[in-house]
Length: 417
Image (cartoon, rainbow, N blue to C red; front, side, top):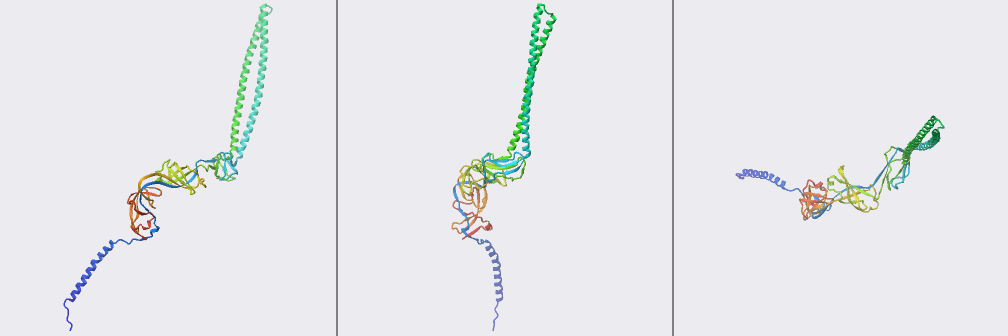
């Protein structure tokens, strides 16, 4: 016979209530505990990372830029006169001397004008000869007239002296004496006038000859100018070097001032380096530099800094002070490095992928056992081509990852395998 148990149902309800209470209390505790747990660190192959150890000591601060080799002296040869390209004698790459003819132009109008001026000079010279003959003839005629008047004056003077002597003796009337004296005076005056006329005619002849000679010189100068212009249709190099460019073709008509050729001296080169404008402020004339031609490194000195920035870069000229390596030629692409300053005692590390001057960057610092890397905030000071100055966030001996870690921006810890 079954005996009913007293209070069993009540105990069951109490147990169920306690269990539900415990479960309800445990859920927030478990949630809070899980929220306090750190997420699992992703694994990264340590051999693929680029790392370096923080050091203290001297640091060479440099800046680098790409550039090209250009001649120190470039001669652009323009067309002095309008013309048509008749013949091209040399092509780019040819060695030239100052009087080497590169190409020939033609200009029929200019050549015709030169010939016309040549004949004008000959005609003016013939006119001068004819004028000399005419003036000399006129001068001789005047001299003859002077001689004739002088003879008449002498005769009149002698006659006057004779009549004066006879008059004193009473052998001739006083009227004849006075007439002879008047005739003598008249002849003397005419002689004086003719002599002045002869002098004036000589001066006039010299003036006319001088004017004609000036006309001839003027025509000769015009002719020489035209002849020189015709000669300039033969385009010469004008300097010793190498013909770099020849941007014209046979048959092309070129106006005056058109650039026909470019001549440069390949043994006198300089480097034009493009330096980022953010770093160009520290570049100064006289700083040491090196130019890498990919076939040798040439030492040099900064000789010029462009005052304007173009496309975010400043052009810096480097004067080369060493021998050019084989293959060095104008327009050759080079790498240039300028030495900005030498820092004596600074905390530094190799330059990370992302590291701008005076900036705050996040770097992964490797743990001493090399199994983990934790993100730390590092303040960077001055930067160089290969190294950066550390102002805060790292100490001597710390090992940091310098590779591009943008793929792990969402993680503060990494597990290194």
